[in-house]
Length: 228
Ligand SMILES: Nc1ncnc2c1ncn2[C@@H]1O[C@H](COP(=O)(O)OP(=O)(O)OP(=O)(O)O)[C@@H](O)[C@H]1O
Ligand SMILES: [Mg+2]
Image 1 (cartoon, rainbow, N blue to C red):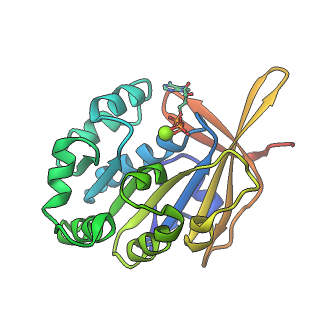
Image 2 (cartoon, rainbow, N blue to C red):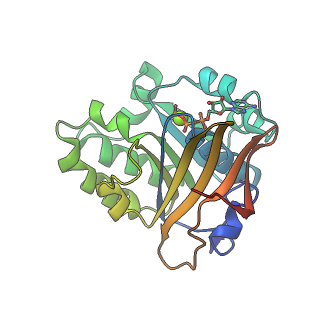
């Protein structure tokens, strides 16, 4: 089954949409659109009546709402609805919500239990940096974290910061799919691009395509290849 990303143009790059119940890693430099893409993905889920979960640690719900307030893709309505649960794992309410799912086994088991017992369909984890709070050795434990999330019946986007576009990390190998955002500094400003690096089971367009921020959020220009 294909899941609509909610980002105009994007689904054309991946043969009609993301394969359901899989785990995707979204990587890119600061300000390249990772959170906006993920917010559009969650909003699409809410519009389709799915159960959605947004997990973060660097933003409160109101900060995220403010960041997305400049766009008109319906994020505010979605995040304020019952369809979307927002968990900030460093705030007390977030910690309480997740700690109901066992004191044992740490973040991985609790998050999986949360997803399973709430029947969550779409998840965003913004971002892998939050794992540093929970794991003593992220490099060691991220494999188990991703493997456990891959077993759930949810379609998951895991945001992973990355500044060097050639520096792949474990999560890129473990994920079912990898999407890169690019910022190219040019004389006239910044050229934004999006690229599907891999998507198991899917014929992909892996060229870098132009990405634009519009009032409606991100827009992928599938007919415009970024010349690098
Ligand atoms: N209408 C708009 N409303 C809000 N942000 C906009 C708008 N148009 C363009 N932007 C830009 O979008 C960028 C934010 O994108 P986003 O938060 O999705 O990036 P990110 O990859 O998650 O960044 P980070 O790594 O810092 O979390 C900002 O730099 C902002 O200037
Ligand atoms: Mg972000």
